[in-house]
Image 1 (cartoon, each protein chain N blue to C red):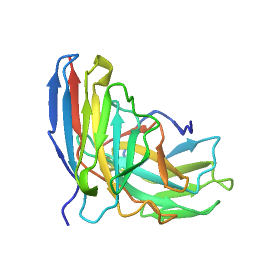
Image 2 (cartoon, rainbow over the protein chains, first blue to last red):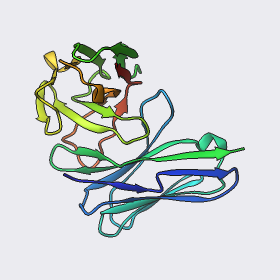
Image 3 (tube, rainbow over the protein chains, first blue to last red):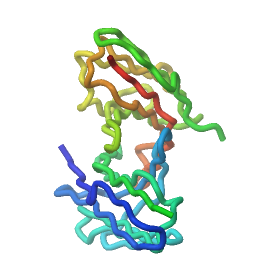
Length: 111
Length: 117
């Protein structure tokens, strides 16, 4: 069974601070995705990274895929209350593109 | 474009009762997924359909859970009989094609929150 461990599990920060969320596995994935989920809703895709070492930026969010394609990080600069939510990484593998979700990081940004 | 529809949104049952959830994916999406999500945790894949065939049900508790996708469109997930530990949100998602690597963007419905008393 593939496992994706995220850290930290919970994060409460003040508006304007920076933060990094980590997603680690012992398995290799063909690609990795990051989702954000708000209460009462399903997860929404933020980004897909495909190549080892790849870095993608989405406004204040920076995503990196590890060189070995086993881990990833999400860095948020100058966090805002609107960034509050559950952040999920998801590894893609296999011919049918099976998705394995991480354990989740709950972020709270306090105004 | 209409999103993934799920019903009901909430369900409360007693243990040993049965329950069914319904999902209507985005039109044209070949792949449909059912996930179980415990509060605050990541979703766990229960079953993945490609059109109306099952491609992964390795984590589906088959003694009590069943799912079908008739005509490769709508899907139902059933639990019979329910246990206390089945209390969770059941998410349905669809994607355009799981056979088109490397991208596989899933679109999720709002989920059904099940409480088993």
